[in-house]
Image (cartoon, rainbow, N blue to C red; front, side):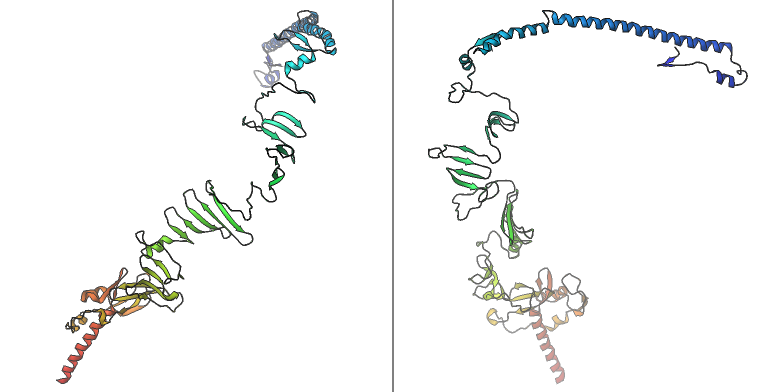
Length: 476
């Protein structure tokens, strides 16, 4: 059909056909007939649709009439619900008249009809709450599902009883009071065996005496007790606990226990860890492990004494000790440190009069070496006392051949801790000295160093031997 939706569609366009030019500059009779047929089909379709709409309108009118009849019959029919309701309402009027005469209605036990009851019977039926001065002898039962506002009793003025105030836990009974209100448990006079407990948001009292008030003691925020003594053990158990001590306007310190077991002491004012105690036994103070100090003095777990002692200790001013003294300050003088007390009661010590100058001591058999903080350029102090020697007789070994075997080098130091800028045009190689005479060198840490204590006697004897030769030559 020539319709698209509600739009009529033409199949021919006479103007375009005429303007197309030969041979279509004239409109043919066939095209006109086709277009007229198309228009006729469209009109037929419109007529058919109109007839269908008219038929549906007649049907709708008939249904409306039938609905009106049904409604009228339904109201008046005896089997209809509305009719039943009307009859029920009409039947109530005699019953209500009886109730007005002093009786009440209830549904019978079978649940099929209403029956009349006297006021006394009604009270016995439901166990009703008594009026003022009466007594309730029955059981009052509340059975309500949990909710966020499950009130069992409204005591008015903001007070109430709840089975649960959150809707989460059914094992709680809440006594609710308004802001500023009080809930008191116990006798009003407070003289019986049950104490009178008065609890508010800002204080608690027993028999009128304050247990705490917000101004002096609030267990939710602080503990403020002066002169109290804790005689039992105080156990605080939580994850990563922290305890803080603050002097207002001065300093704040804290100590905490890490979940690894480490104990820290923290300067909260400077936000700096001051001390750490490891579970391994190591102690860390201001950036240094005390275990490093122990290692430096060879302080191991096998030592018989376990004490670091103060530098001002009354007994020899010891700093570190084991079964005997390792080190300390001689006579308490910080410029006279000593290292390892000797067996005869004397001390091996050194004296520094230069501020901040650092010395290291290394004791060898028969001498002590001192090395300064500018490198290994120290000196040896040979113990030459004959009482410390076993003398075999005069020296007979020729010294001049040994001295003649020495070689010299021109060098600069290259290792860290030495003066690398100074050139030494004449110097020793400790390894070559050792090859000439093993006693000419000594070990200081990982380095070899010339040993003037043994080199000097060889030089002196070589000079004597040369002097003897000179005298022989002069006599000739």
